[in-house]
Image (tube, rainbow, N blue to C red):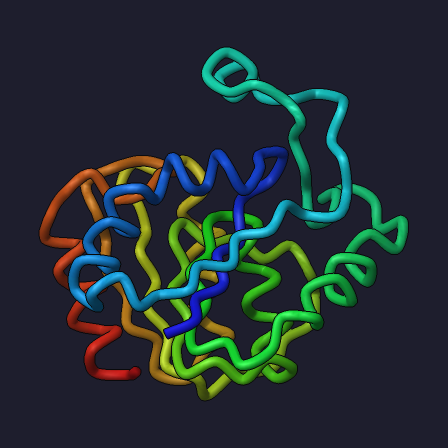
Length: 185
């Protein structure tokens, strides 16, 4: 199985791997280490206004897929960059990475998409038929953006976890992820 992992705004692939280490470990065990993880850094370097918590916990460099307040062709650059990854079975994305999983779905044609605290600041509105799982933190201050993202999917499967804008803190959510992948892979 080939899974593309897309990190959040002003973070990196190494931060995504740290955030998703429990999930990655579970899936590697479930599929006998036969998962090829592709977790690239976004092509745009972030230098300004990095979240204090990110700077405190993680070393630079930091990256973004696009800036939320200006376009600057960064989104096109990110889409073009991610087109190189072929034969993807699934996309697991966090926060801003979920916008890219949405925009790339017709290009990469994965069998499933999993959005964790996903956001989409891009105005295109078309619906996707690919099976999707959306994990939304009950305490996430921007959970409304995750809810709006689900409207872009036909029959989205939505789970609210006990956390904030983070990977789920509860084991039940991870079992739901495993069940979802088994059903759609």
